[in-house]
Amino acid sequence: MAKTSVIARSLKEPKYSTRTVRRCFKCGRKRGYMRDFELCRICFRELANEGVIPGVRKSSW
Image (cartoon, one colour):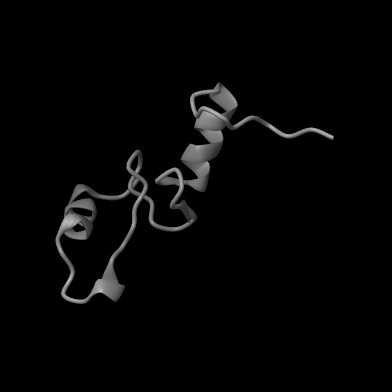
């Protein structure tokens, strides 16, 4: 879980557009981020297994 100060800093408008840091809205993690869901991979997996994310289900073959 990211510190509150780090999350607050990432919400500020960056000086350059390339410095934009996208963070998971649930936990604040910046690595392993999925833009389509605005979640990190860990939170995505938790919510997908619970069936909270519509249209996503565990694959099996």
